[in-house]
Image (cartoon, rainbow, N blue to C red):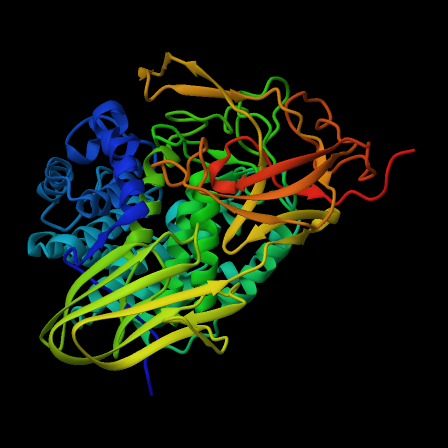
Amino acid sequence: MENNSYKQFELNQIKPTGWLKKQLEIQAKGLSGNLHKVWPDVRDSAWIGGDRESAENERTPYWLDGAIPLAYLVGDAGFIEEVTGYVEAIIDNQKPSGWICPADENVNEKTDLWSSFLIGKVLSQYVVFTGDERAYGALKKLMKRLYGILSDGSLKLRNWGKSRWFEALVPLYFISRREKEPWVKPFARILKKQGEDWASLTERWKRPLNTWTFQTHIVNIAMMIKYDALYCAITGEKSSEPEKALWDLLSEYNGTAVGTLTGDECLSGIGADHGTELCSVVELMYSFETLFALTGDPVWADRLEKVAFNALPATLSDDMWSHQYDQTVNQISCINIPGRKFFRTNANDAGMFGLEPHYGCCTANFSQGWPKFAENAFLRSEKGVVVPVIMPAELDTEIDGVPVKISCKTEYPFRFSALYTVRAKKKVRFELKIRVPEFARSLKIDGKKMPKSRWIVIDGVFEGASEIEIAFEDTPRLVSRPGGMKVAEYGPLVFCLPLKERWERIEYEKDGVERKFPYCDWSVTTKDEWRYGFAGGELEVVEKKGDPVPFSSKKPRIALKTKLERVDWEFYDGYENIAARYPVSNASLGEEKEAELAPYGCAKLRMTEMPKVRGKKK
């Protein structure tokens, strides 16, 4: 029976090309590639002998978790040297016992192990790209130390460590794939026993509260979705696949039009007016990547690409020097909101673009989003190679001792076709398995129409160069959302009415941290009218050249033409810069306009969920 779990390719065998390479290059030239030069919490981190960090000791590990794959994927020798210096300094500071965190290794009832779990993920990521045995040895030594602390009763999991116990499973699974260590399975079982029982918390997720709790914290939940699959992969226990029911429930009560959950900072219910924390976006992507790799279920890859192609680029500036803490689906301003607090548990600056809006966790953590996505361009199966998400990339590997190179040339998700080229030095048999997106209404392979399927499976003998051209079609559509609202979708992309943006630079110093261009803060406003509904269901696809920025806010590569009409829609009660959740009425006010809808990820100010206009106002 075929094993439906897949493994990552290691030692830098995957190279991004096309628009994906450009996206990563922009990120490396932006905040992710410069954070250690401008931000004291990473530049002067306690992890490398300095005196700065957050209370959770998570900022440098968060940054490295994305900076390591980013540096190697773009092939920047200087950047690689810099992240290597961080990793080596962290290993140099490891205690003989295996303890590696800046916090005191003499644990007590207040010790939180969260950052130790996180640095385990970082060391795993480093070994993926380097194969460094010293780093792998440090990882094993750390994890054995943590096992000892929890197994001998020195400490019980608490706070972040209790909520995020499954993050320690990531490095444990990494170790278990390489060798059989007798302490790995017992460690996993202790973590589950002491950790939060997330499956028992579902009733708390049905009604949003204006209070902060670990159990409704959006990032904890985004991380949590993968816990059972990881646990069972390590222990060999049979999975009941709770993630499916948990995700369905979370989406029903807190889902957004772009495949994420509302949480500003804790679960915030249904509605386009409340935010989604950026940390939850990238952690949700990583959870979906993990779930696909462990289960082989294509639904997780469908969910992954919807988040990656919509929510992630929407919350980052084009140059990736600034980001939001919270994005909202209907977003008519990104400012420090005057007046009483709007977000449930976050400050009113959480929707601004900047270096560190509201809190600095996302400043460090957003870096993992695009690089880890690129790492999943190809996965290794028992029979050959699997493609979870179509993206422009190359794989240079060996199969049964034969050098094989697979490249994908594509503009997906902006176009729905791809050309795969397989080059083998000599005859070798393997399977190339490509996931077909769920939305695809028809499928062609090498120009021939094929039966609808979730997979393209090419199983044969390869020698020399072989080409496989795939194409699929979709029809743009209006999708229903709660409250009678509609959203335009085409393929994996969600579309919105973009509003002309005015960016105002804000430079200042706070808590000894300078905000200076290009890592300053930004207030983004518009004078455009936003009170519209869909005048009908007609949507026309317009393919464009675009500009070099893949998810450009100035020249998107695709648009949908449609007709909109004005409706009666007010500001959120008590504010002059936030659209109310729903319009007063969806009756037409008689002002029709032809509009071009832009991909959600290309617009920082936008109206996404809008009503369908019914009749004319008399």
